[in-house]
Image 1 (spheres, one colour):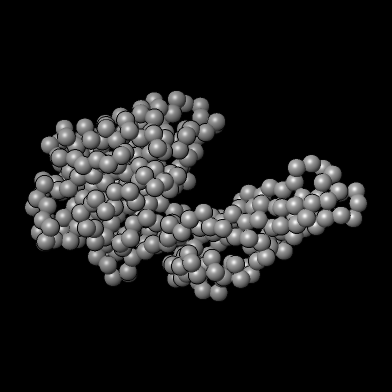
Image 2 (cartoon, one colour; image 1 turned 60 degrees about the vertical axis):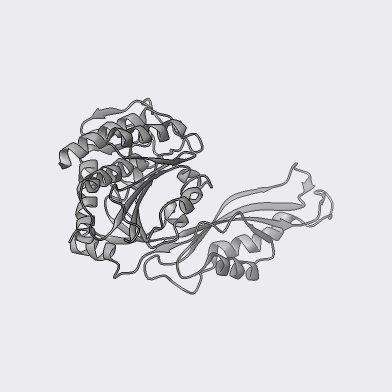
Length: 354
C-alpha cells in the first residue's frame, strides 16, 4: 500500500515541478492538485488557488486534524544550472524548483490523506489543504480559507524538517523605522544628520536582549536588514529609513514586543503587520506524545511558515531539508519522500486508530 502511495506522490510531485507556481500565480498547480484528488474519487473544494478535501466519512461530531502544506514557490535564483521546471531523477535525487520546499512534504501529506481516506477513523476527521502564497506570507493563502474549512482542532504543517518535529515556531514582525534630522549643506555647519540620529537606535537593535527567554525557542532576535538615507554627497540627509526583522518567541506577543521596542528607541516605528504570530503545542498533546514514542527529535524553529497563520495547536514536520530551500538546483532525495509518507502514517496511527 505504501509503495503505491509513494509512486502516486512521486508522479504528482514531478507534475507540480513542471508547472511554474510562483506566489499569487498558482492557478495551474491548484488545478493539477484538484485533478489528482478527483482521479482518486475525492470531492474537492477550492477558493482562489487553495484546494482542500475532507475524508469521505467525515463526521461533524468528531474533532478534526488538518494536514496542510503549500504549492507555491519562490522564483528560481540566478545560480541555477538546470531547468528549474524540468523534473529530473539522478542518483536518488529529484531535481526541480519546489521539489524540497514544499513539494516533498505536500505530496507526502496528500499520500497520507489518501491512505486514511480508505479507513474508518473512529477518533478524528482529516482535512487536507494545499494552499497558496506561503512564500510571501500572503493574505490569499491558508488565512483566506480558514473560515471555510471545517472547524480544526489541531494541525500538521508540512515543511522540509528532515522529518524532525518543530513543536514551536517563532513569529515574525517587520518594522519600518525612520530617524528624522534636518537637511543642510554638507560643507557648512547646517542641518541635523539623520544618519547620526539613527546610530543609537541601530546600536540598540543590535545589542538589546529581551529578558524573557522561551523554553523551546530561546531568545528573541532582531536584525537590521535594510537601510537607506541621503540623495547626494553634499546634502545632509533629512531622514534615515531602515527595516528591522524581528523574530518573536512565545514569551512575548507581537504587541508586547512592539511596545518594548517603542519605549527604547527615538525613531518612528511602524509594523507592516501583526499577523505572523509565534506558534506551538503543549508537550502532552497527542501529536507530541506520538513523536516521542517514535523517537522523533523535537525542536523549536526559528523560521516562519503557515503555522503563524493557524490559530490552533500545530506542529511542523516533513521530508526534505530546510537548508536546500530556495537554493540553486533544488532537489529532494527520493527516499526522503518515501520516509516522509511512512513517518506521517506512523505518527498518525498512534493518534487516530484505536
